[in-house]
Length: 278
Image (cartoon, rainbow, N blue to C red; front, side, top):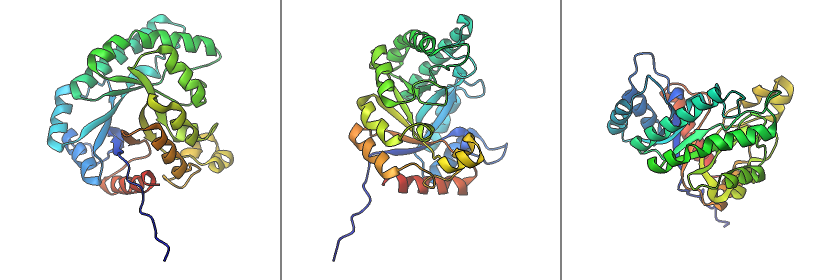
């Protein structure tokens, strides 16, 4: 009889963004951490800095739940991109990133996600490249002191659209404290996700887990491509996971999809278990 091989066990941990945890306006921060834990997650992703979230409050929620911080998203990077022509606006994200890194260090989190800049009619590709690198370099000392990495994310910002370019960008910065946060769903529209991890290699710092349907994007509009459940779009999860193995990555896989109540979170955790074992 032909044997059936068991799904591959990987040293990947599952996490969810705090904003995905829904349970009513009176749900406390520790309760939200506990809800995610009970659904099957071991980590939480936060958006910082945030005046509504103190380091002390986050530490209490972590202690009460046993949850880790899987990652931090730098909050001002879209509103005040490091590529902006106005130096004063760029400065706001430099300061925001430095604060997020310091908070990450205090909370034992080793990764802060950064959208490096936005190419637009007013900002050309070369300007985005040079301005964002200059801003990131100003934060490297803070990252080293906090022992918290800056992780550049691939997003729909018309900038760095393939993994070879991502490698070139990180390597030009030339710091062990700067790497890449790979968003699997974001790149489906213009590349193949399975190409990214093995090319990024040791630069890979974190993963965002989401899906994308090229058919929905074509038929209903580009952003509608994200409107499919995990595993029901065009991501070849087995190929992506093989590429993750080749990169030697063993960190967090963070869901970035519509969240909900405890039932929804449990569904997502179980679906992620299946995909991560592909």
